[in-house]
Image 1: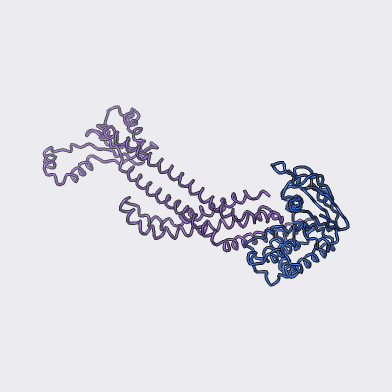
Image 2: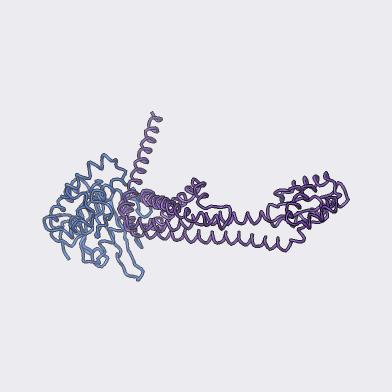
Amino acid sequence: MMTRQVSTFFKLKKFIMWTDIKRIIKSGFVNFWRNSFVSLASILVMTVTLFVLGSLLFVGVMLESSLAQIKDKVDINVYFVTEAPEEEILTLKTSLETLPEVRSVEYVSRTDALERFKTRHENDQLTLQALEELGENPLGANLNIKAVETSQYKGIAAFLQSDSALAQDKTNIIDKVNYFQNKAAIDNLTKIIESSETFGFLVTIILVIATVIITFNTVRLAIYTSKDEIAVMQLVGANNSYIRGPFVFEGILYGAAAGFLTLIFLYPLTIWLGPVTERFFGNINIFTYFVGNFGRIFVIIVGSGIILGAISSFLAVRKYLKV
Amino acid sequence: MIYFDNISKIYSEGRFALENVSFSIAPGEFVSIVGHSGAGKTTLLRMLLAEERPSEGSVFFESTDINSLDKRLLNNYRRRIGSIFQDLRLLPYKTAYENIAFAMEVAGKSDDEIESDVPYVLDLVNLEDKMCRFPHELSGGERQRVAIARAIVNQPDIILADEPTGNLDPINTYEIVQIFKKINELGTVVILTTHNKGVVDSVEGRVITMDKGRVVRDDPSGQYVL
């Protein structure tokens, strides 16, 4: 008997909850439609907000791609003496590869080095003739090392200078490490990359905060027009969630509509900017990126809009729920 | 049922809106509160609705101090009151029908109950043909009748009516007073503030006269004396 009563109670509670949710959603839609001017103004402001967020996303990708290209161009070469045994070079290569700072190590044998030299100077007959007159390969093998971060070359160079790198044989097989010649350039580049990343991050944070504040104030103004309405709802005995529900749902609608609008605006813009970005940044076409990552961009833009709208509405209504 | 226990309301400038007001209202009573503008009538109703808190004293409803109620209980308490505000306070973006339905929705009424009761009360206040109009599309008197319909639709224990006939012509005023009387006959407490001697006389109930925030006369026989 008791179990039946409890079950009936929960069924009733579930029914009331479902009825409330249905009414909240319906009321949210009706308010959205009837306050069309306020809704439109809010959507437009939120669209600008999300457009800035979307643009930041693209700028971030382009900056990241550019920095990656620059980073990729930085490397150090270890030149070995001509008598250096290949096994020792390969041992050194293996130990370099175990370092977490090292992204890749390319071994260029003496023969390969000679081939590359010849290719590089194929139009310079004098040099090629001099090389032929020598009768033997004057070039040593070398290792081309790329670090994960440009700031890590210093550590790699120090490792190469240390005994541990050549622990198996005390004979110094390294002729030259070009890091020390390029140190100033690498350090400068490292500084520029780090500054660009920090600057990009700061600009992103500032713009995100600014746009969130603008959205919050817009939604707050939209809800300000309903503050008397909220007071009346309280005086007829509506509970806070029942009052807040339609406004939060309206905020979600603003965010979703603004999100879709932003994606619609971004489409032709990326088509137009695609070739420009490809020319300027090399391997990144903003339109290809937009289409290729549409799912992720959709979730970020529309999701941010929905979250922004819901939170802004929730906080704005809270202010007026004090009667 | 209702007891105002020596309540005072003092605004920041030291001005008394209410001063040491004490009286009680029994179940089923019809009370008219009369007095000049600024006498404290509306403030008294606002205290009863817990829209304002007294600076001193307490307001009791069925032996419970309404200012000690938590948010949930306060909502439940307010659902037992039907209020007609002086400025009506209809929801501007809802139609006449939706304004009345909203009061039923917050009271947890089902869709079926709403669909049957709202047209009934609209008919009672002669607005059945204007149920789809928004407040700004209605005349002052029609808006007032929507507010009355909203107040009575949940069959509350108490009806608070702040100048409910202020914008009505004599015929409508008479009809509204008859509605209040009928509701009161069913056991609902009706508390109305008015300047209208005709209304007070036709009610023939208890009359509380206020002046400068004090109760200056409490006449059970229905005398309108200012």
